[in-house]
Length: 226
Image (tube, rainbow, N blue to C red; front, side):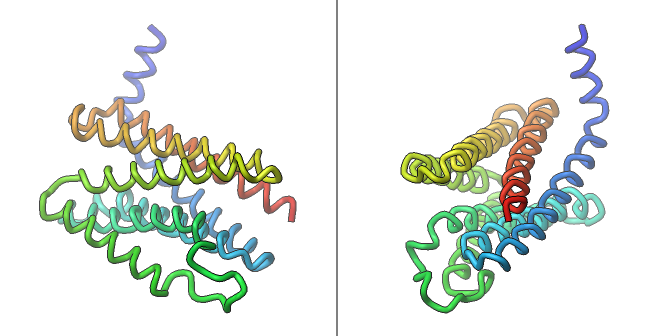
């Protein structure tokens, strides 16, 4: 009975929950951007700078999707714009783990937002967004993000096995990536099989909150050590 009551309560207040969820994610993203930027200024570690960009793009994407979209006429265009930022954030997340394979740490640091490699991210994100926009679907968004988080989870788990000094951090990181992938899979199922079932979407909201809180915890722990 209590469980049914809670489910009914959540469903009756789903719009309020959506707003609270969006504001929480945006606040967490903004806080992580500020903290990681400070950490980058102290360490000059490029991976941290690319991780900072991840949450900048996620924060903007969530702001457009949940705060701006209700007040703008062309919903699908606005969703596509937010999709661009979310997909780009995913590419930056992947690159934050792989940047040493493409950049020489000894070379002069370049802009983390505007360089040849990031332009490739922007082009790929634009292609994914245009495919979804012209077909009026979300398939390419879901597929791209599930693949990205699957790869990121595999890379972070590999680093967990190899890097004894950061095992605890990489274990939590791998877990967060698996949760993220699960959230995208649930999101895809909600769209493709459950016709955007409100209860499934609320579960996705809670999963995402947990994921972002895990990142926030990791960033706070690292910055306290500094």
